[in-house]
Image 1 (cartoon, rainbow, N blue to C red):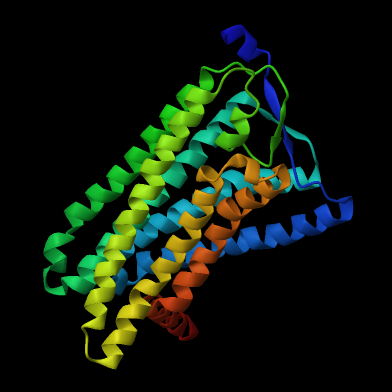
Image 2: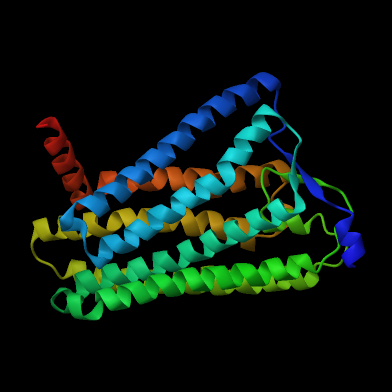
Length: 309
């Protein structure tokens, strides 16, 4: 098995099957969006780091989400842009496996962080007087470290199961080395991999989504009990940004990993992967900067200071 696997030393990354001019146009467009993604997330990360009013567990969790979004973009988009400029670009076997590991690590960690953030919103709105006790800095750091450790461990399990498979052709793979695309290239039975992936998807997607919905159900009940219209508006605006990100992340992930693969043709899967790994990280800073009053306030204070220098 090891000898068969060593036959394949690289994979050929395929881009979108479009005309040359359209690919060049998309390369320019995606390059600008990539820069916007890094700048947008970088601005939020900078605001959280520099503004003392945002030095709280709530924005510590947000900073981790921003770091993951930037890591997502850096691990997938540059290779995608290269593919648009030079179709059928090869990637080494080791590089492909590394990309698979990173993608899985970021995906699982982001999923767990979204659950942690929903719990944080729940405590902040439903138990505001006990917030500093329940969500202390020690608890916050522990939750973040656990999320990263669990994401890395689960990704390592999937990669370990992939490495036991022989790869002897074909060599073509979509966009980047996402695990579903890699498994299609194995010349052996991948039922065990598919089973572990499905069980992990249920555990990492369905379970956390239920926890998020439970948190927001309690939040909604608490908000409806508030009599002040101003407090209603403030409470909704506080957690609406996070809820938008949750819908985008879990919606695209469940469609991609839990829907029957027969329902998604090859080109449609490319679009799903593109949305999941590219547009989600790009939209997140827009959502948070537009709907979060404290982030907008920090941005105004930063710009006001700059204008006085």
